[in-house]
Image (cartoon, rainbow, N blue to C red):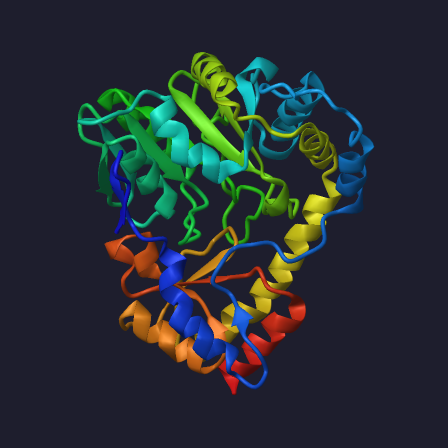
Length: 365
């Protein structure tokens, strides 16, 4: 455990525990195929690079709320791409990537000791870390389980990291209703919304899900759809009152997206062509990697959208990690995402075409 002498104990950083398996995988004669982390490997689109450099000579401080042009571009993009209507530019806030927002959202919302934060049973680890940073208790909810009364914050994640599960409109409506009944704010992590495969994900703010934005926030990222992980380009939006409160706190804390990155984000939001091209790259990798895993004896569950194949050999996850490492392939054990993931591994689509081809060859040899 990491002990913060002035705060809560936090879990060890999960990927550090992969070091031994990573070393074994690197010894493979053909080199390692790292499918453990969902970090983009494809070039940043030229239109985004050009926008970034176009405002390189602006010496003043950027605004925490982002430029009006950036927020207007975001409103237009989520309506065009995801059918979210009725969103005011004032209710949009750029963030320094989505992980930062996830980690600090409970604290910024005033969640504290004695409060409860509900997360999915199998979930992105930073949901739990954010709750612990705030001193709150974490409750893991089984599929479609309502949060306990008095819960302060409920995290939704569709498409899911790590499982790729997509919640239906009906499930999202029920989840929002249950959270509101418990008195909780809903935060929906939608970072993989642009990557549908076998199901069409829906934003929690789509009019088919909510009639109003009260108590509901959505979190978006350009890391996956626009290969901008290195730019730290995210957004939170939804309930105008909640966003206004987050803005005021972030002003005091200096949580500001750099001005060149804001311009790059605007360009990414205005251009849909590069998003479609990136989606096609991931689909091509998925179309060869998924059948190769199944041919090697894996069962792939959920994985209807997003960047991961939630896979199992019906054994302890670490045994599967070792089996893959023997073949020079590195994946993430499902235990990183909660006890319910103990017999699964998360296999990412974020490797070059050449490395994915190498993994397919090793799996089917």
